[in-house]
Image 1 (cartoon, rainbow, N blue to C red):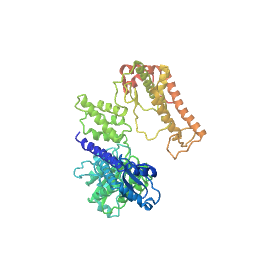
Image 2: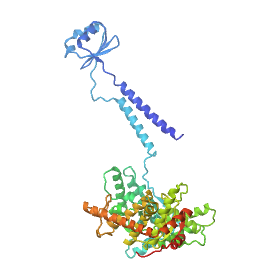
Image 3: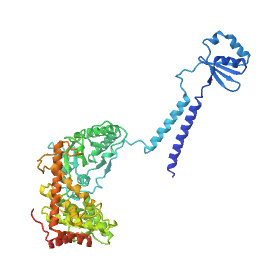
Image 4: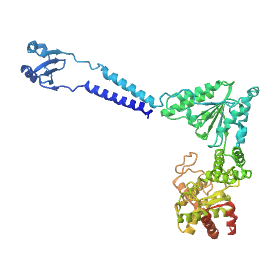
Length: 595
């Protein structure tokens, strides 16, 4: 409440000043007198009703005894040829005044003064409401003490290739004379490119820790302001601070916030471009004796200005991608050192079950597992905790509070059983890991598969298999429940998307190895579709999805008993693990077979 009082007083002061200005302006502009004929003016004088007469160059204002003021216009040259009339006015006791008309350009200082005061008060109000002070021109970069930086390359796992790329930067910062003696020049800048959470910032900190040099770090958004020139000034200050050190590392996170390709006409674009131009000048204007290395991170290298990426600025681009199986195993072991772990934990199994996870995702899995172990009163993290944490991160938390009707539970059980049986019967499918009808995230049920290897490319057979598995849920609803529900909407969307990629991007259709653009797609490299080609593309996409549906339906008709047994088991226990699923399906003759 106390903090609001100055603002309330400021608003009241502005309102009061506006009121005074309006009143003064009204008072300084009185309404003009009523106009009368000159003959009527003469009658007022003859009748003795005139008190005073004020003569100007254009009119006569007459004050009457009834306190009215009237105005009349005399004939041209009237007072110059009728001196007796003037004498008669004096004899009658009428006050006669002669005033020149004020020039049209005369300034009214009162209203101008009040207007200036009002504008000053309004400016002060704007100044106070924009954080109470003008933006600082100082750099917002923070400096990490090299002696306090404890992160080393051993703390960064799963990005071995990236560490090898930046190792020579560390060697140069430690022994610059060794490279300078043979004419070598360290890269001015290193751009770390990769998806979010892959450890780009951690890698930059490890470089600083290994080199033992100061580490100045800032975000790209720290330089961008609505005030023109502030961002460029902050860039200048950042590099000025960096030059105070013999050697140092400047780290700019989210470089795309300030390094987007130039082009635009708004003021915000102009300010950002000024900031970018200053960054380009600073990076290319180093004294080569300074051991200053700029490291930047972004996950949008495609939108960066080309001038940033030329040699002499960011000479080297290092890709920091999601880790493979070996990398995930190493990352998990790094994070598990920080918690109390059960000796029986199979870290390799957890790593195999987390394909596509970034380093941040894996750190989250370990943290969730530790919280889960504490919640259940365990003194160490077990394999069960890690698997439950992985499922939570991958599929969402269990939502047991959702009250499904019995009809919804039955439909969900048959739906998930359809997915599972199709996946178990097809040779190209990834192994089943878990099937549950407990709602997780936005899904009412989940059939989870875990790949045995990390895939970087996909065969047509594998993608066709994925479409068939996705169609298994809808096919099971139609075959065994004799209806269709909206629960298959996400499956249908994903199957259609896979089919569209196969036709339009991967060239896996009779249309041939051509790339086509779809409606709403922004890829300019792809061919625009004619009306006839568009129909053929749609037909091919539909054909892939429907063949997958027919394939799934045929498998479910063949293995009716297995689908029924799996659905019944899910209604009884709600969740089945890999071993339980395999045992149940084998008893009903479901085994992988060649197509």
